Image (cartoon, protein in one colour):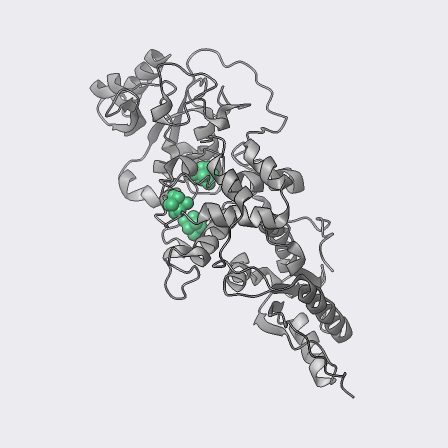
Length: 161
Length: 297
Ligand code: SF4
Ligand code: SF4
Ligand code: SF4
C-alpha cells in the first residue's frame, strides 16, 4: 500500500547524481520492490561517483535545482577500486567553496548507498527532500538583490592585488 | 643586484645555454614595466628589477603559450619568489620540465599593488597584499641567485589571505550570497582573469566549449556564477596566489577571494601548499583511505 499523498505548498527540485554500480541499482531495487520514495528526485546515472564533476552540481544550481544529491559505493567497494575516494576529496573542497559562495551546504547531500540498500535509499531521499523543503526555494541568481550591507562591502573593499 | 643578473643572463645567451631570457624592462610610462623576451646578449642591459615589476612571467611558460616558445629548448626566466611558486607548480603538474627552465631568482622586497600607486618608493600604502607575510622574498627554487641565500624558515604556512576572506566568512550565509551577487553583477565575462592566470593552462577552456555548453555564455548572473565557481574549483590546490586575476579585472572584482579561501581549505584539510615542492601530488588526484568524511551520510 502506498503512502498517503500529501499536498505541499512547495515541491523542491532535487538532482541526484548516482553511481550505476551501487546507488542506481539500489534505487532500482527500491522500485522493483515497490517501495515508496519522494518523487522530487531526478536521477542521473553515471559510471562512478568519481565521475561526478563539480560542474554537474554547479550546472544543476544554475538551472534552478533546490538541492543536489550525490551518491556512490561505500569506501572499499568501488567498482573501479578508488573512484569514490577521489569523489570524497573533491566534495570536501567543493562544499567549502559553495559555503564561501553563500549556498547552504545542507542543500548538497552526499551518501554511500550500496546496491542492496534500497531501504537506506528511500530513507535518505525522503529525509533530504524534507530538509530541502524546509529550506525553501534556492535563491535564483537572477533574483533582484538589494542588500545595503552587501553594497557597502562591495564599495569599500580593501585594496588587494 | 640587477648587474649580477644581467651578467649571468649575458653569459647564458653568449654560451648558447639558453635561447631566451624572459624578464622585465622599462614600460610605456615611468610607473610601469613590461615583460621582455631577450634573445641577443647585447640586449641584457634592458633588464630591470624593482617593485614595479608586478607581472607574473610564468604565464609565458604555460602550455597555452607554447606557440611563443616554439623552437626554444631552454628558457631563462627572472623570478621573484611568488613567480617561482607558479613555476614549481607548473613543473609539479607536468606542464613543464625542470631542465627546460633556468630560474634567475631575485631577492624581492615586495611589489606595488597597481602601477598607478607607484610614487617612487614602496610603502604600506601601495604594497600588494600578497607581499604581506610573504615567505619567499628569498626564493626557494633557483638556478642562480645574486649573492648568498640566507636560510629561511618556510615550515609554517604562508598566510597572505586578504582580510576580506575573513570578513566574508564572518557574515551570515545569505549576506555572503548577496555580497557575491552584488559584486559579480559587474562581471561582463571578458575572461581577463583566466588569460592572466599561470595555471589556467587548458587549450580549450571549459567556458569556451559549446557542445555541450557547460557554462552559460551570457554575462547574466547565472553564467557569471557558473563561471566563477568553475574557475575556482579548477584552481583548487593549484592557485599560487599571484593575485594577477584581481589586478587584471577591469571591473575591480576581487576575483581571487575564492582562490584564497580554497587555499586555506586545502591547507586545513590536506596540509597541501601549492608551489613549494616539485614532487608533492595535488590533493585532488590522490587520496587516503581514512580521509575525513564527516559530511557523508
Ligand atoms: S576579469 Fe573581471 S570582468 Fe573579466 S571575466 Fe574576470 S571577473 Fe569578469
Ligand atoms: S587564480 Fe589568480 S591568484 Fe591564483 S594563480 Fe591564477 S591569477 Fe594567480
Ligand atoms: S577556468 Fe578551468 S577550464 Fe578554463 S582555462 Fe582555467 S582551468 Fe582551464
